[in-house]
Amino acid sequence: MDLRQLPALNAIKAFEAAARHESFSRAADELFVTHGAVSHQIRALEAELGVALFVRDGKRVRLTDSGRRYATHVRSALMALADATREIRAGDRERRLVVSMLSSFAARWVTPRIGSFIEAHPQWDLELLSTNALTDFARDDVDVAIRFGFGKYSGLHAELLLEEIFFPACSPNFNGGKLPQTPADLARVPLLRSDDELWRPWFDAAGLTDWPEPKRGVLYQDSSNLLQAAIDGQGIALTRRSLAMHEIAAGRLVRLFDVDGPSPWQYYFICPPQMMETERVRAFRDWVFDEVGRFKLLFERACEAGPTASADLAADALRAAALTSRPSPSDAR
Image (cartoon, rainbow, N blue to C red; front, side, top):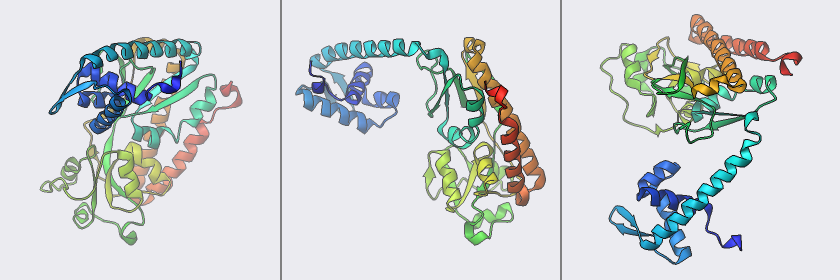
């Protein structure tokens, strides 16, 4: 067999999903790509095979007879490949700790701290999956997930990890260093927007009850990108404390005012109940809850100091947390 004659795996995966759903849109949702990407992959596959796999009827699609026969063989081949992959992984699976979380939380909260866990537990191979897709523990090869939501996770072990709040922040050099002094001053500056961080509840908390949600300017889909735009001086961002405090400690952001906005979502530690019996999951749970405790202390000290001194105190607290969380030689064994 000449494996060079096989179609591209991405095209095969797109075809299998589209065939199973008989929908390009549903296949795109499952694969986390666009409808256009799925359509392009399948058209390229049809051109390579010289066979029509789908009949297009407006926005609806259905398999041709050839497409249905091909889908049966493709699905069997992909299932065999998945089974072989699971089998080969099973040999070292007990040494792997797979943790899924939001991309923004992974980049801005976990990554600056995770070194202490890795040093303390070299016996496990940690894999951090940064994704905004919900974990299906019955299907996905994941041990633990940290999710930003309402806490309703039926059949799973779920613990509240960290309460979230929102507040405005910007670069210390924004507007030449002439930063807003009162919430009302925000009327004269660009407010950065995001689907997740809505200004309306914060306006109410700040007494600006007649202010509407901003409708102009760039709309950021990712909270980490929103934060980076604020760091770059593009405007004032309404940001989560979990994402902003590391940047405040580093001096890249300044928290404005002393007004917290409520969040309908919180961070939860979730996993299948049986996974709580494993040593690697218990160790990660203890570590992440300890880090949350240090983080809350950092935030409380910063709030007590006020916005002008919060960056210095936050930096001091981060350095102290790094020292206290660094494992001793005996801990690392």
